[in-house]
Length: 381
Image (cartoon, rainbow, N blue to C red; front, side, top):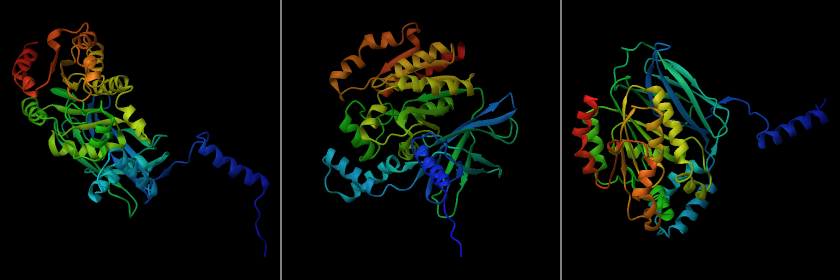
């Protein structure tokens, strides 16, 4: 009976392959997701592509390997100590659920199939180094097949034993209104300028809406029937938590998060305050490509770079943005707020933009009272 031996060349090739893959020098093999992987299919917005005479949507998916285990327990203990949490099993379970997507290994070079209601099956992926795939998908049928505002669900076709994955695609025509809204401290209490409070709001506490914003957004939805984009600087690891918050309180729309993953708490906190302007401009460029003829309203707050990002896009696409509303956040970090909320900051950010095109507010009722005038002005323009 002969025994097959591995030659030195074969061994060296396999060993080098493992090293190169760890060093990201070798491109990993593309494979479908397995039962031990977790996939998130993220809600999207479909636009009518006149060039191809089809509806199109950019669909993002996230891929993880469920292997957090002891790391999750260690991170829960770290957060509990940092926040001086009581020994409360329910609170710790909440932290564990929210921290798990930060711990589970992201999966590169993965694909997944999804099926929408017309029984069309599409392959999404492969995922890139950050565990994210982005594919532009065409939906069957012409312009009249999907009325403005209709929502279509799609399901992931996953191996037996996998967690279910589904998404909703919102179809929007080229005409009408659109609203681009920030999330943290615009509609959700996050207190991003206080690190400890930010961690507590993110990983421990119930997600709380900024007072008055739920009523304002539903008023906007009733008056304008807009396409909604919730544009946040948070990492995509928080997608399930923020999506549930939006579904519970706000009009249906697409949640747009940063397509990168952070594995340390310090990096997570920095992600909400660093590089947000360029990131948001890039995402709004996409939205303009999809809906160049929609009349847009942008709503943000003073804690990050919303004024600067919205102003840049206002100038970049003349006539596209009809109004910018900035919520002035107070009582979180008084030292930083002196500059963030200063008249000089806003005048510099909106230099060259008509004064009636942007508004700062503290009470959402201030915006609510102005909506009739805005609609009348835009209608006459």
